[in-house]
Image (cartoon, rainbow, N blue to C red; front, side, top):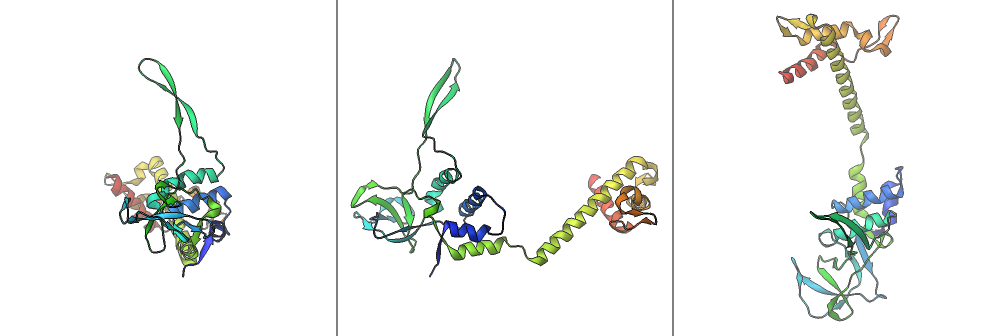
Length: 262
């Protein structure tokens, strides 16, 4: 049995330990929906009469019944039919105002012109029940009149297990963090060595050549011998404390760059 939670409870679970504004939280929540990581649900209560007709699978234009049925329970607001609604809803929930129309200026070959651009609010008319059946919302027992609903964030329901799965997927384990820090440190050291190598080639080119060929080993030796110049923050009265890596490793990185250039 799925455990349902409100959208606000989901936001608390997802972002309790992150310093994000409410709008940033909503942006991420909706992106989880847009990318299929979370589903949005809507609960229809028995007190409020909501009717619908069952649709033929894979054909939203054909119904299986000529009579409406009263709908009760949790319904999936599927991306296939409702993603446009939520793309409109997100900026509204973030504080933007809905503009029904605006004057748009244009220009043809002869003269400028203005026209009124009208914008239509998209509603939700097709929902999916817990048995994966699609329903088209209708007004009472009138199958010819389509009905739409306009749930806001406060009315959205999510499955708690899906939210927990998203949290688990976005967590980074301590071992992964350690590996990432090691990788970042390695890349930083490598870039520092290559910058130092570039300096040596530019200022001591003749000492970087062996038999008319640029030598990675000679460049590495120059970088190493001039370490205090390249890493002054590591220097002391007793000389350089430590270089990012040994001469052989420096030569390997420099050689890789030379091969790519050739």
